[in-house]
Image (cartoon, rainbow, N blue to C red; front, side, top):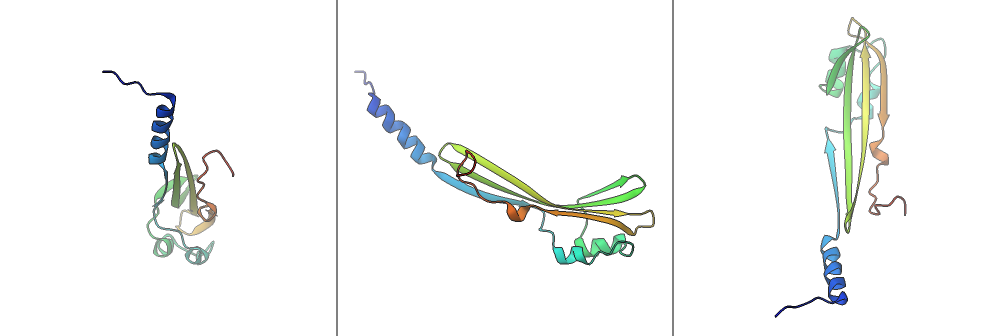
Length: 128
């Protein structure tokens, strides 16, 4: 004997699947947060590479750029939300770039903080 599902049965199956999908939120961080007080202790023309490492730790990236050494520190935050069958992912980073001269003394510091403004957004279609 063969059974056929009516339109109401299909609607019930779809509603059950959507209900099981539900909502979820998660957060992930890559590397420890960068501290503003340690950053303020770095003085252009005075602070050495060793002092920067003691303040901020080992950099994630070290590069040579136009005769200078560059230390790059970063912290990433990811927030992921799922609403029924739709997902949204938001990623932001805090970055510190420290430039040193050939003698290993700080010449410039560039810093940006964007993770504080990162919000969970459960609605996947923009602002609500």
